[in-house]
Length: 396
Ligand SMILES: C[S@@+](CC[C@H](N)C(=O)[O-])C[C@H]1O[C@@H](n2cnc3c(N)ncnc32)[C@H](O)[C@@H]1O
Image (cartoon, rainbow, N blue to C red; front, side, top):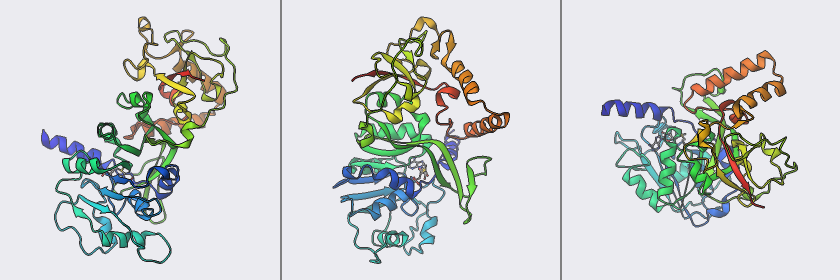
């Protein structure tokens, strides 16, 4: 039994090896610099020899005024140890265990060549050699939790398969964080209440992101390629950043230009709210509850709107009393038609897709759904998947 469990865990961990690229990290992190001065940063799913999160913070240690950088890796990672050789690192951990940590409290002028690149990181690691952990580097282990307690801000791309647990632990220890996840997580019963309570929100970038993956990963028909160096890549269309660090975009007002009419915005048959099919169509003069597509969260400004709930189809009790339970139907229904069906009709009519496009799209969707990430295409979430229709109360 225990053997089976650890095999399953290993299989899952194997599918968690998606390495974040430096430009994606730099593009997002630049919006949060002010939060980092004097802070202890923890990257707790990151092999320092591989992780661009480690590289980013090591290279910006002084410019950002960090107090300390801690980086721990998991010995289930298929790249752990590989880069030691790449760097011809003299002091390879000799134990069979390959989970280790690196702690930086200062970064000197490294190799002094004026450029910040991999050579600097190599020097940084030479003067701050990794220390073997006594366990396997699991972020839930006691020793990693001790490091978490010491940290002010956790920044990483955690294993997608353990996303719920990862976030729960951050909340339990009351940590600030900026992490990468899948947009599907928005509707998890463990995550959505945090969004509603403004304990967690989306960062800047949402949508496409490409990751390098280990050699062992199987080729795929879509969203997979091998670059000229032989490196395998996968991309996802529904990646986003989750954070509880404040940022400017979260306070930008969404421009509204439409006015409410009962004809254009029908009330749901089974929810005490009107249907708003597109975020851009949110009426400026409607003060009641509105069902909007999940993509709304990318534009969410808590001074302008209040997230009241989501449809019961996303979780029991999510509608916060707006659902009429006598209907027995949890999908939002307007005029006897479900929003799902209505939107499928609308999509077919308005897109006027050729057969080829349709086939390509469904192949892509099927492929993505097979993947660990249960991916949906951004912008199609409410249409194709019947995903959340958040209910909002306009405040201003
Ligand atoms: C999506 S990858 C991202 C790697 C790295 N953070 C990055 O962004 O490039 C998630 C990483 O978490 C590691 N991991 C899996 N299970 C873990 C666990 N229980 N504790 C800590 N790390 C884990 C995987 O080995 C993998 O390297």
